Length: 232
Ligand SMILES: [Fe+2]
Image: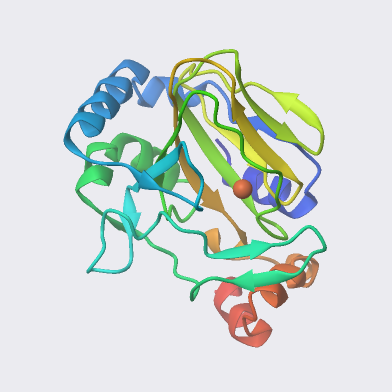
């Protein structure tokens, strides 16, 4: 996976889902990740997320020392269908790795060569789960590593349906567009996900920064502060 490709996809917003290629298979053994996931599920409790029934999670990373396992669970902000942004809590990057994340180090290490990996989570969508359509925010993407899934699990992006297979590859989803997921099978769907935003990269050009200003504005982040930080 090439860092510049990820950055230009994020800035162009011209995609629904992009497979990040075969290279991951050389570095990460899907069977091992599946075994680790089974082990994590047997030792740890996944907790409810976003007030949904049938959608639970545990973090791989965190910021809050008092809540290392579930700090990454909740939403950071929410965009209503009419575009209004409500921030649930202060923006944190969540780059510290907890005891669950250390079991998934091969995934985190692999991605770390391309962007600042943060807020990794293991997400479970139970049989019959359906999420309502929403947007995560301007210039937001999510990298998915499907661990257990089947053809009746779908992600809908701007009205188009996709299935992300558990084939050892990463998939990059455009969550700036309206999206939702559905599990119409009778098995759990388990994905490991990592958000990608402009804050996931350094060294943007001045031009890029003016393009993604709406991302900074939606979070009430100081443009000047980030202009200095993102260019260094
Ligand atoms: Fe989302």
